[in-house]
Length: 394
Image (cartoon, rainbow, N blue to C red; front, top):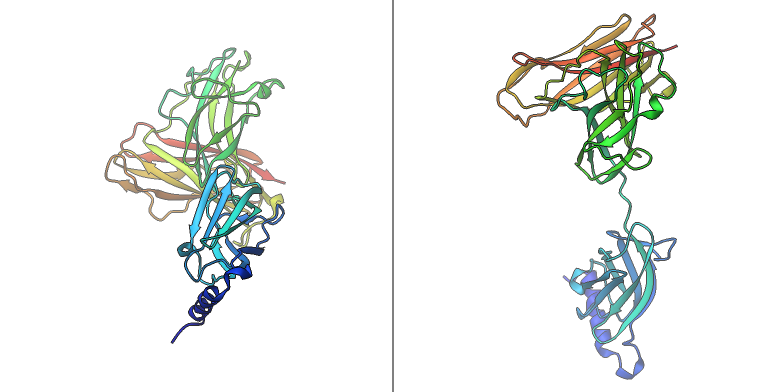
């Protein structure tokens, strides 16, 4: 049995051989393309393209299709074309064309039948891939942090963080530093004076933003040029938030008391926030933004709502670790995992231990306060601690 496709190819081949040399029928012609290849309807790199015309030489295996872009040439042979191709229709996957970008870019399409060719100008573009993944912000525990420690009233202070892009492609990341929960009035000039710098001390570009490649980490410093001279023994929370278009903002924070040493986190524990879910009083997904908000450090909830935060935890020291939550009047807080405590039996363990914490607001809850998430190693001198500010939505 001969398939319809093979029969059509056989007919094409016979017709090509029977065409008189003087008839002009050997001229290659392009009548149409699908998509049209105009600036408004460009070919998509990696997409399927159909070219309709005549005398392509496909039945004899002589067809070549060349894409000549601003940066070079890509050529396909007959063997690279897709099923459904014939002497009057070519079906193919649009290859990478040198110099073509995510904007519609003109290029030359050359179709040859082995003896003649035809050229037309079309447009193509590289499809834009949506940014997805996550941003991680972590207070640095591998050095004495802050600097100086303790922070001194009337003097500058540096607070060190790491920002990592766990994304599918490079991301333009916006950064915001903030001071919250101060036990004294915050001078109006203090927060605008905060500087976000590279870990080396070089100031970031205007707008406090930076470009991170997929998987790249960057050490950053939030510099307070001058702690208010009247702030001796004043407590506050220093927050750094990272955001990018299409991703949830993430932040980390640290409670600071001016004049008192700030205890370091356990450097053997890394806990990255990976997801958030919010539920209403009936356990259904809460989707009304008027009833909750979360920026990675501050949780705002209306009574009856619960917010679950998921963490991916890794440890570099063999030990048994216990996760716990502090209490606050009218707020519920719990570690949801059944495997708590969890044990790592070796140093630099690549295992990821998932931990989910739940924080909820009840009627009559304290209007504002803090709740701590702690991971404690049985044999560790330091705990890993993350503090959340919670606020009740009236």
